[in-house]
Amino acid sequence: MTDWLIGLMENLGAPGAGLAIALENLFPPLPSEVILPLAGFTASQGDMDLLDAVVWTTLGSVVGALALYWIGALLGRERTLALAARIPLLSISDIEKTEAWFLKHGRKTVFFGRMIPVFRSLISIPAGVERMPLTVFTLLTTAGSLIWNTIFILAGYALGEKWSLVETYVGTGTNIVIAVVALAVVVFVVKRLNERRKNRRASQTSS
Image (cartoon, rainbow, N blue to C red; front, side, top):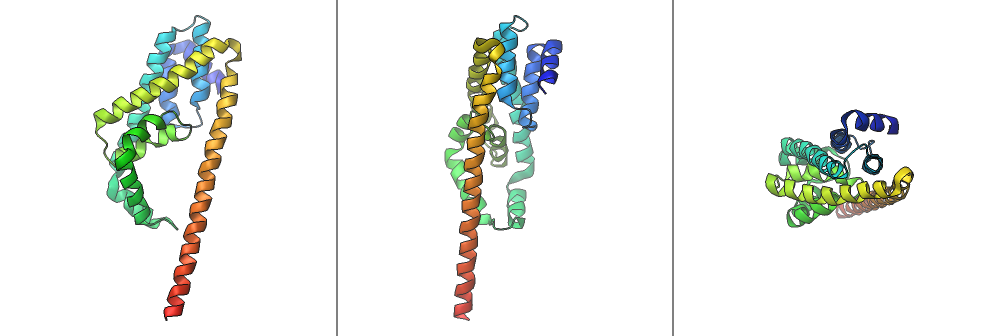
């Protein structure tokens, strides 16, 4: 993967880094914690302008996020509710609660979500489902992506040949996020199964 990214940046320069980041939104196996520091390292070698790297990767982030936004918009609220009704242990009320929370905190979620591993891409879909105003979504995504991209590009620029250290440390953070999400899912499943058991016992008792 690293060789492919190096080749992409060597052939296309900063636009290549932007293309890689756009694809990262759609294909998470292309991690930004590899692409961005590598772009910074490339800039430190004089093969890419540092400002161009920041601008193009931020543009790539916005393009990728908009693609997922429109996927969410095309999916729509009704289809989302219909899909939720088919998922075991998940109810429409769960989606409605999430929807209410997003309507209240959506702007902060989109902005800060662009700086959280795993959620960076996923947050664009509910924004599209809820049809967050496109201008607002684009501005928040641009601002959050600009901060994230700049930090990692500068880290790669400063570390030089040791740019891969960024991936090591961020990878630990990503694993923590995944672990927290997995724990939350387990807690949700256990809670929902207990609720169903109680409801069955109550119905048996009443009958």
